[in-house]
Amino acid sequence: MLQLIEKILADVEGFKAENKEQVEEFRLKYLSKKGELNKVFEEFRNVPNDKKKEIGQKINALKQAAQAKFEALQNNHCNDDDSDSLNVDTSLPEMPMELGSHHPISIVRNEIIDIFSRIGFTVSEGPEVEDDWHVFSALNFPPEHPARDMQDTFFIERNPDILLRTHTSSVQVRMMEHTQPPIRSIFPGRVFRNEAISARAHCIFHQVEGLYVDTNVSFADLKQTLLYFAKEMFGTKTQIRLRPSYFPFTEPSAEMDISCSICGGKGCSVCKGTGWLEILGCGMVDPNVLKSCGIDADKYTGFAFGMGVERIAMLKYQVKDIRLFFKNDTRFIKQFEAAK
Ligand code: DAH
Image 1 (cartoon, rainbow, N blue to C red):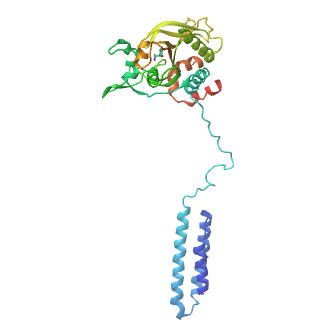
Image 2 (image 1 turned 90 degrees about the vertical axis):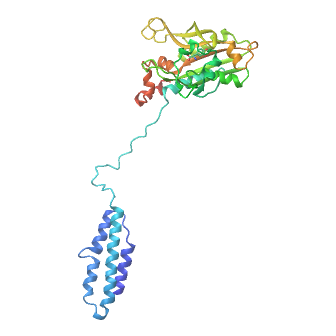
Image 3 (image 1 turned 45 degrees about the horizontal axis):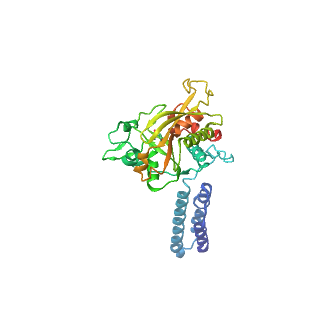
């Protein structure tokens, strides 16, 4: 009898259940009416009186062990999914992983970088939080000059000398301050303007600035560089025209238009009937700027240009609303990788 009790105890303790069904098997095998424990209790009747005490204690211990084991098994499997009651076909293939894609602004930015890299321009970046010197003063904006209002600026309240850059022309200054010519670089980056958001304007957007400083750099070099860029970006049939303009940091200054790629120059709603689309500002670096940055203005000349990446993307892909670039709707963003 003692041997039997010990064998059952060892079996109970060694029992392993993988799932709810096996927990139930345990209950039936040991704890149910016809289970092993009840059989032992029945046998107990035949135990001689002088052994009853000893064997009775063993049987009680066995009963407690079996009950404790059953509770432990139940706890382990109480959260098991009842896969039969879930209407899931586990043999179906899994949902395909969604692949990411480049944002259209990144695509156009990278294309601009590629185009200028092919003619020897290096790429540099500067800080978005800037000081007055790099955004305005060194670029020949005198204090209180109305030209500062051309760009509505976000200032830091506690220190009006610190601001969010309104253009990437600030990186020209940083470049010239620590590098002597020849300099041939472009500076892509994010810029900030305190402007109302509309279909045509946003308070955050992207620009690419270009700078070339060396001996004998001429306006003809500027024009030829920009013609090359326009043809690479918008197609070989593209023509450019330069209109006189004003920027404090360039003299002379110009704005560049490209022939409208939608109507081929005949005039349409996109170019407002003119056949031309404005895409960037440019000019010869003002000698005052060279001097502010520690470059010998008698020895060197240079040209600079700056363009808005959103503007180029809107023209290239015929996007009518700049806000689409910032909404992060993947149905919009995903369309451009293949169109590249
Ligand atoms: N910084 C000007 C802007 O944000 C763009 C610009 C115009 C850059 C003429 C230049 C330039 O380098 O020469 O409106």
